[in-house]
Length: 135
Image (cartoon, rainbow, N blue to C red):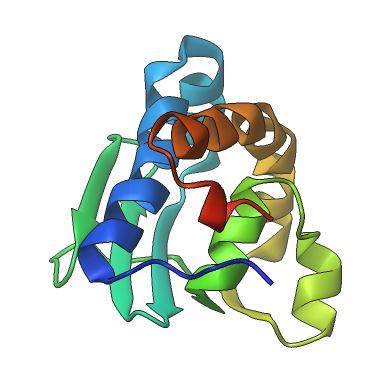
């Protein structure tokens, strides 16, 4: 089993960084913008609420005026393993590891873009000496 993030700030740093990497990539950003998603993630262990506006590229930790049209509820371990390509969303939803409130098809349409970011996320963990977070 992988380690979990040390605290909320660390979880926000790594999970936020992968979204930022997507916004920084012109091809991925176009797909994110087109999705129209405002994604709220309610992450546990450690607790973190992060809202990502795919259209504007804003990433907000904590309370925000942004109205999400999709909410994901999951553990930080599941989020960490997802960004490493180790969690399949449909199976995780079926197992109750990820709870989704909103349009699942829009999220599923973005999964190919997420897969593009897996190597970048893993490289970030490795560069930061966080092999304990590798799944």
